[in-house]
Length: 446
Ligand code: ARG
Image 1 (cartoon, protein in one colour):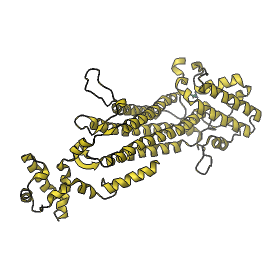
Image 2: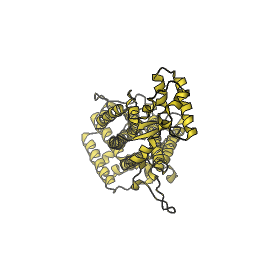
Image 3: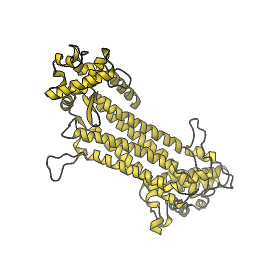
Image 4: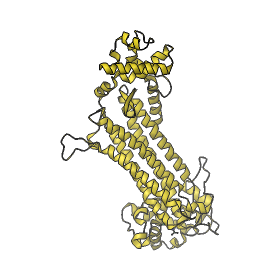
């Protein structure tokens, strides 16, 4: 049962937050006169010493004492008699909730910083190879030409939404549970606002934020689920970027060369270079989704308020944090070390069929209704296929025979530079717009 019920093997990492919470709580107890200032100081000194021991790896954790909270309190009691008063007006239930809210604020800040790093790596490539054109794909079929920078800027948008989500989670975490007790608060005259202020649970104006309902406070695990959601969704984004890189780095495409340090060879086939980092990013996204699912299932049938089941809420959260942090670092390294193979990109994007839509727009410019133009260009594409010639090599009279709207100037449509320059609207892949996007990102990520 001891092995079965302990949580210290995973919640020991909450120690810095637990100690910060205990220091704030004891400061509050002294503030309202429930303990003396001398007792508070003794508790603080003892907690500081314990934290130093923990950080130096000199603290011995005991599974007999179940969790991080009991381990630290017990160690404190051995050093400081006043420790017996520390748990006044507090339960492990509001203590766990507090530790985790402090953890979430920290974890979100770490992940935001890492995501910014990944964005900076993407921006660096977008700027370095800003003039490279590649085919954009729908249904994994060549669709229309885009600047590689435009494609990479799509990832920048995705990761920016992840940053925003972690900001929201950090804001939701920013409410102080202490004072909720086990379920129904306390009869003692505590000052919840004091504790909240001490722990930095404050709004933009520095006003304390305390949770509004003691029962909800100790039962609520929304934040766990929100955090795991943000991680899972970031994981989906990493996975989609990874999938593009896997395709792009294949011999069939070879738009990019991935850095050797993030790839492996085959133990059997000497020619192989496998995109391991990208495949693991794709794989780990499944794990992040699994963690979210664990939390949803864990909480869905629980009666209010705390139930011991909730001890199982921490491993998936810690795993999501650790893996998302690792994934972000590895994504950053993979992108930062990747080489764009400009010749291969140029060859792929030279396919004139990529501008078939522009050809339809050409007819629309001449007053042809789009549906009719689309149909006419379809016939032109078919003819080129039948004759096995590139689209732009068809003789003018032959295309004019398919639709009278085509003039002798029709091959001008296949000038890529001109085609890109015409994509002028906001969010489009024209050179001026892409430049604008990159300038915005440079400023945002500075
Ligand atoms: N180890 C427990 C957990 O992590 C601490 C809370 C215990 N609370 C209680 N009422 N038994 O959830």
